[in-house]
Amino acid sequence: MKLFPMLLLICIAAFKTKAQIHIATDSILLVSVSKTQLTPLASDSLCSSFFIVIPGEVKLHYHASHTENVIVMEGTGIMKLGENDIKIKKGDLIVIPKGTKHAVKNTGEIPLKVISVQSPYFDGKDRVFVD
Figure 1 (cartoon, rainbow, N blue to C red):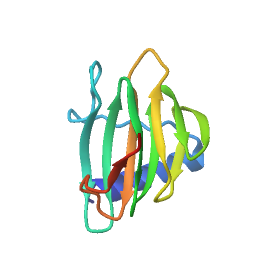
Figure 2 (figure 1 turned 60 degrees about the horizontal axis):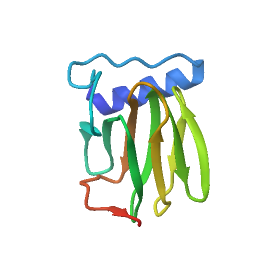
Figure 3 (figure 1 turned 90 degrees about the horizontal axis):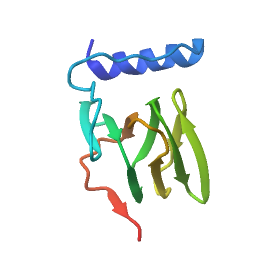
Figure 4 (figure 1 turned 60 degrees about the vertical axis):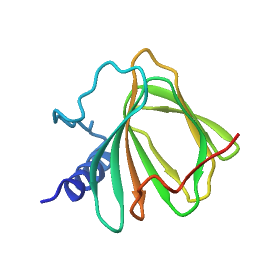
């Protein structure tokens, strides 16, 4: 089974049972970083998934043609989602419809670690930063 379908099944099962999600591969176990790091997990023409480590913040932006789902794996933060500021923590799922302005700021002692699933395929060209 390819990595993305396996991750999706794990996430669905974990949310149904309220279980914790643990991913243990050398490519995504990052402990101490000074800037945001992005590790591609899997992609095809329909979607792309990434493991993202955020020690500080991700500036306000939107995706013109992508919907993004963010699963918080570790840490805490404040996410600006449209006009709202929401507290996020381990286990949260944030659905970001295309065109929605969003940003995140880490509020914890450790880097914020998330899985981001974007649909359709995401190559980075669709990210529009807002002043």
